[in-house]
Image 1 (cartoon, each protein chain N blue to C red):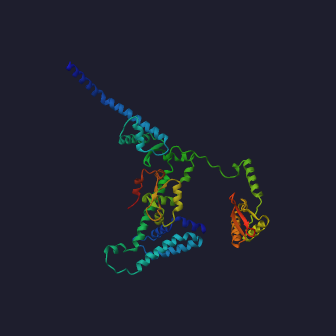
Image 2 (cartoon, each protein chain N blue to C red):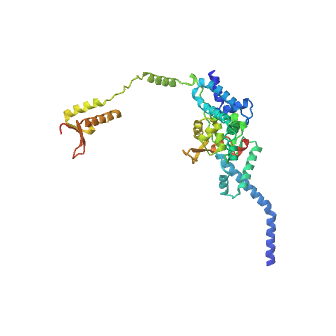
Image 3 (cartoon, rainbow over the protein chains, first blue to last red):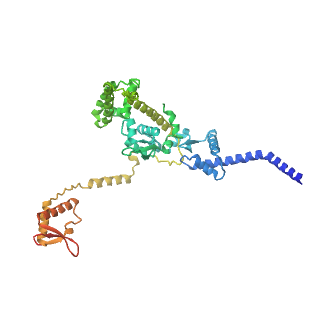
Length: 203
Length: 241
């Protein structure tokens, strides 16, 4: 009796060992493909960058994965678009992931969307943005001191465009408002995060 | 001429920017800025610009005077108190401040350039969900329909037809109002305080009437009292009561 049972057990383990590696890999790949398509579908619906945390949260509702695994799948998707020479690409912008069209097709898209030209920032506005980006949080008088010119008009313009936002008050006489850059800023310049900007600053 | 000047002004974001330009143009080592020369060039440029636009000179004067301040600080003999070595080292070079400022600005200038270049590239990449915008109609009479023209003409005519009317400023005098109140009191003996201030009167007129009442009270001609039962404020002739 016991022998028989043992035999059975051995057999089943052997069976498992025979089939499982391939089986598991298959399921794994299937699952991976599924997750990849889920992420693709989400990105397809989002005009704004979506964070890794958020993507993982959605994926985890069906299949718990580690952040690194999700990141790998996203990377695979990104490579897929490149190897298939798709008209769009998956990019990491403003601390998130987003789909954007390939620059090759911009002359054609431009024929449909004209407003882009108007969105361009002036050199003065960009200068103020650059100062805020590196010295944030910073007050307006501090910006003025660096530039040697009044920046209030430019600053208002940047706030209106949501590239800059007030983040608090400096504990100093007059309690001047402190300003910092927003995610919209990163999006506008296609930056992953502020760290990506730092190397351009010679020290 | 004017255009060229305007262009020159727009080329610089401000006096610091111009200062940087001067240093680069003359290829001066940033650590050895001849402040006096810079001031001279600054003033020349400033005069040039101020002929056209006086209001834009303020920031330049600010920076120029700062340069003069640094220069004078350099020329002045140093205070000979050598108590604290560190302290003296700290205030040693007046150049330091402006150099530090310029280097700082230089960096931001470079970043600005990078960002502008980046922007150029980024403009070619489109996010999802951007609504297509219609082409703007070319300007010209072609795109105007007969109805448009008619509407425009009507609009013009109504504007042209509206007669210009002048609004005359009204002057209210306390003496006039005093006379008015006196006359009224002669006829009525007493009347309610409120009846003096009809809502039709302007604010200035209301104030003048009030002043007239006060004046009459001071002169002893009038008293203001409350009616016992209705609690209505009354203006009474003092001679009567």
